[in-house]
Structure formats: C-alpha cells, structure tokens
Length: 282
Image (cartoon, rainbow, N blue to C red; front, side):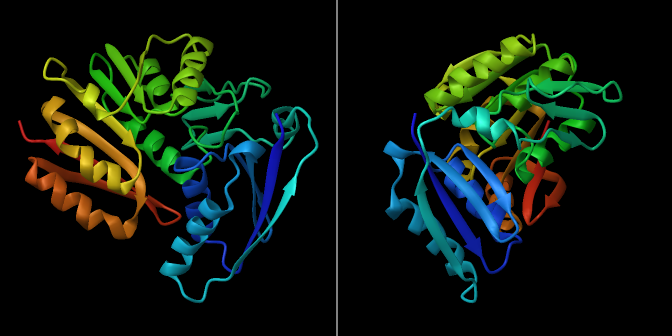
C-alpha cells in the first residue's frame, strides 16, 4: 500500500499538536504519526488523502488561537512496508507505573502488574495519546473484578483488554469502524482475554443490556449525543468513564450528565485533554 506523508509545522506545539493528531486519526483516515521538533509527520494511505479534510482540521485549530501558524508539506512515499518502517521509532508506554502498553516487538517488563500487547497499526489505543493514557490511569483505581464492562469506541481494544485482565465478569467492545473492529479482535486474541467485539454504534445498546462500568473515549459531540444511551444501560450505582475532549468541554458534558442522573466524581487532565469519572445514582 502506498502512503502519503504530511509534514506539519506548528508555531506552538502544546496543546495543538495533540489536538491535530486526534482530529486526523480519530475523525479521519490517518493511521500513524511521528512527532518532530517543530510539529508532527502524519501518514495516510495515498488513496485516502484529502487536502480539504486536512485544511479543515488545521482551520479548527486556528479558530482556537488566531496567533497560531501552521504549514504543511505533502510527500508521497515509495511503495514499501511502511508499518515495518514505523516500528523502528514506535515506543512502548508505561502508564502510572502499573500498566505497560507495548507492541509485539517490544520486550515485556517484569515490574508492572499489567502487560498489554497492541499491534501498532495506528497511534490511538496504544496509550500514546493523552486521552487513552487518562482512561487507563482511571481504570487503575476502578473496581472491575466481577463487573460487566462496556468499551464504547473501543479502537484497538486496549481499555477492554485492561478491564478483562482486571477480572471483569464480561466485557463488550463496540466500534463503528470495521478496521478497528478487526484490529481489536486480533489484539484480544494476542492478549488471551475474553472480550465480545461488536461492529456498530450506540444503537446496539438495547433494553436487554446492562453494564456496571462503561468506558467511552470518543469525542465531545458523540458523547453528548450518545450519553442517554449509555445511561440507559448503566446499572444503578454504576460508573461511566469519559474522555476524548478538552478541558473547556467539561461544563457541557457535566450538564448533560446531570440531566441523566449522572454525578461527576473525579476529573483528570493531561496536555489540555480531560477525563471524567461519573456515577449513576443508586
């Protein structure tokens, strides 16, 4: 498969580099990224490259800060095994000293409680992004053993894998993207955990389902839209962990949650990204 490299330069790296990477990978077809001293190199299958989408993502950043300067150069890469090339610079991530998220070609560590192996086909779901890191860190303190867990927008399945390793009685992972669905299946097998993967969206959350813990690392608009569906299948006293948004989005999400009987119990931030721990009233 031929790839296109987009070399993006930013006049201010934080928090705009993370924001741009999230937009390109979460909402678009970009599947890997390399940070540079001046910005980021983003990689996309050549047939899926769309300069209009790229410019829209950049314009969204500039709308947040009129002083931000952002330029890019586009290069079509020679036909080769790009994933193999990317592996050379791909790094494992240690989360709060308790969870190690690595690729199959990284050596395991003996000083962590949970070792998770994720095939590095994309940056999201490998704990490199702040939102995935935040969700994993919240899961460290969460009581999971014996509970029914739902991972919405599961991506590579890393959150579902940690929940299963922590002793969840049942784990379901839902993603609307077929690539993510198939990649998650591979990662569940690789980590030898029992997780039920489903291809679809919140419409799969029917009346006969119930969960004690729901994980949703998506984006602000989808969370606002689908939160009623999450609340409807969340058991009384259950927990909802959310991320995929910025600190300035918290007020809107909290207001939405309160109308559904969900109360904010904890908030964490990393590089301007935020995660919330909400509880449903018993």
